[in-house]
Length: 550
Image (tube, rainbow, N blue to C red):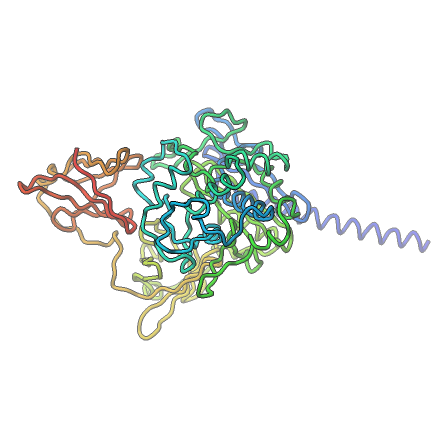
């Protein structure tokens, strides 16, 4: 009788534990479904997502469409361009070669590219891996982006940016830099004697059984390839063509969620590199002054609601991706989408937080404030790196807008603390020495803004000019062989359209100078001695490009 009672208690315990686990799993699936379906609905470009924790796949699903024109639904097996997640593979490849004694982190780039103009600066492999080299990132160059359709070799890409002025001395600052990973790809080729694509395939894809992973190609037939899309006002369009020789070791790989799980397992279990090398990749590197970069080698160093994480996202024409790894609990979340313009980073972070049992606060948990309380914080705030954020009051709400970005609502949690939709980013306002200040917090990214009189482009005051002058500016201006700005007029307004980009209205701020409101940019027209418009100079992002009228 006693044994029967003990058996009954044991069965009850097993049933309770199993039932609880099942309920947790079901609740997680419901939360994941909600997060993904809210962002990737049925008739739009879609998403595949996988959540793995402590040896088990907790979730593996797809939403939306893999191809809009053929009405093909997304499935978990679909293959995507993973963009900058490629940098993880490049980093591990470099660390593999270091373990083989073929190079070191301290090797200068002139060892592999003897004619590289370093101007007496020591640019080492370490600086390339953690984005502290100071080399100009080629994707920041307007002239380079005009070459998006052109196939180029790694050396041709390097030749295009190597003579650009360095942005800072190596190790002095951190700035995300695709050029550094182009150079790393070239180093892999020089050291291994094999093309980058071949090295990755032979040393990573094949040994790990990653049969749905490729060096990207626009001509190769790739089974289960999801078509890439870009948003437009009316819905969606096919993404612009990009020669995948250009992202190269910084962003040209393709994969699926299942293959990315194989990659995660290999990294976690030290199948490709030793634990010491993995620790290097995951270390929060520092600048020369000791400040953290929040970046290792090919991985960002961050946190998910207080739990340390290692992660990276990717963005490339038609695709955005995000992968998060929480070493403490062997948790891996990978989210791949076939649309650009909207990163799934927040989605993956929320999924990781739920898997950890530490979900972020929902934005519907907020309070009501009076109009006066809300308007108290209206103004423009200047942050480091010349970042300008504007707080405005509209329709009973506060909105935040970084110059050149979308306007987003922020919701009050208290009189001075506000949260963005999604719950991952907060503002905390205050008063210091009679001026308004705001502490911005987006996970590991924390910065402070001070009230300023400076106005963003959207608040610039346009002047009135004679509409009869506008036709003088009409024409095509060649800023580079394949980069043209077309200027047109309609209804007494002036419009400009750059190659491969939408058309935008430009507004006069002075004679022959026009500004854009959608981004921080302006066009300055030049005239000859007779007063005829002959050229235009585009000023944007600290760069200037001059083009002659055709």
